Image 1: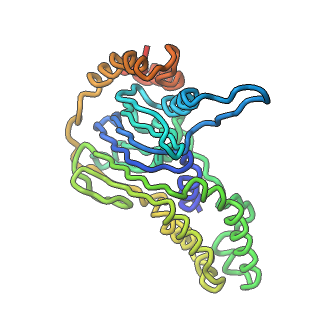
Image 2 (image 1 turned 30 degrees about the horizontal axis):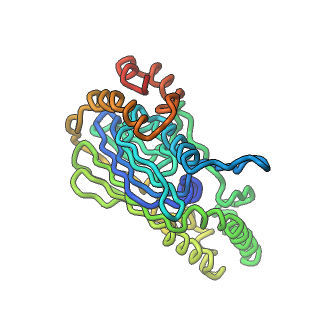
Length: 329
């Protein structure tokens, strides 16, 4: 049930609370690029009130904690035009542009695409775009069991079960769903996110996105996703039994409920990619040069992190050419 597992983890665990806003990726053929982010979200990080008698964090202290979480996102080579603060309802408002050497390495904290995507050459030429299925070291990403259940059976095993026995397995899944639903509601309620990927050439063979020339658009509504999952597990046993007994059917139903987030449903090809859409090296250099003034304007400490050490180490091993332009000094 790989597709269902990936869909569930992206929907329920790949976000830091409620997120509203837009993000636009502009990608070069080598997989490097930039993303403009403009979101309002549940504050990332944990704001501890401290031990009894100790003054709680100030608003500026909480802003710095939330900002630190986002700016330390893995795979970011440079930030520019960053703005951060709190909305009147207490949510964290963040805007900024992140540059990255490789889309595969990027994990943006607090956004709908934290789990990552990849843009890579395909065997028959051109490029293929889709969800990242391997970690930075090449190992497959972990696949959590649906609802955490280890006793799930194969469709063939479900076929051999009497209806009454299968109904018990269905009820067990309903129980697991209800146990996880508060977390799903906490992370999905109010989510409204539009993500646009501007690829380096016209796209074809598109699945899971709205396509327009070189653009892929994904719009997600957490309330709709949660309502669809509720509707799925509210179906009578007689309607769910065939889904359990048919290979891939329960996965497909969950994929549909969650907005087609399953493996193979987030795909597009770029048969004839063009050249770079922007001068990556020049823009990263300018962002690095502008960052000290930006940090001062935002009243951030001199040692405030700007790019992860892990990213700089990987960059130094990966490409000598990118080592001098990745991260801040």
